[in-house]
Image 1 (cartoon, helix red, strand yellow):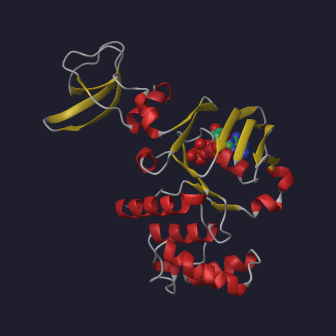
Image 2: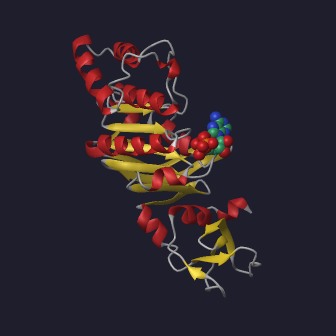
Image 3: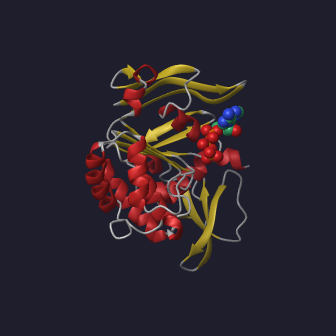
Length: 283
Ligand SMILES: Nc1ncnc2c1ncn2[C@@H]1O[C@H](COP(=O)(O)OP(=O)(O)OP(=O)(O)O)[C@@H](O)[C@H]1O
């Protein structure tokens, strides 16, 4: 179990995160917040690249700072910018990464074969990475992060740049990997996380806003989201969430406490919830 206890992180006079408390157990967690909300700051603290200004982070009850290399040995991390050698094949690159981690060659080779199959790169294992798609490269990165069979896998913005098929493949892969470990991934792309994460962590005003299931976050807005025909002026108290295409033409999705005239109630999705939660920040 990983526990974040009353963690505050300041950069000089600027407070990036304030008094954050969270508990992670095996499963998939999505850190979802607009750019600049503090996702990377939290990830850097969870990966010991930064340390809290106040508070502590505990792994099985022990401070990760004191655990040091022991903690890093059970951590797998895919940073936002994943560095690789285009002229290497995935197998060569994984062998290189395994050697850097001092994993004995025989053990590494067996593990690499298994990981290449798990991430769906068995057929491309010996092809140079220079012609790989974004999704293939990302799967190489996940395999590297999985080399030590981590108990905690952290992926920073892993879905950026994936096409729809690659997103589905990524979702399935993450579900497989999360069976017996904690997976934490950050994104600001709502649709990527809605079906992947069991729990969604959101920050607002540098504090924890919620850690809850997508369904429960959406339920907070039940009965407050309506669809209106586009072109209708919004009344006071109605907040425009998004514009889209309905069955009969352009429509608006609005958030309001009183059902609008001509409004049809709709089931709130995570995108509605995200836009509603961060609405002040857009205006
Ligand atoms: N080294 C630093 N010095 C000063 N301010 C920083 C530093 N690193 C981050 N910040 C600020 O802290 C806030 C949180 O940044 P962070 O990178 O954690 O956000 P984020 O949610 O990961 O955003 P993004 O998705 O853009 O990476 C931002 O306002 C950022 O400008």
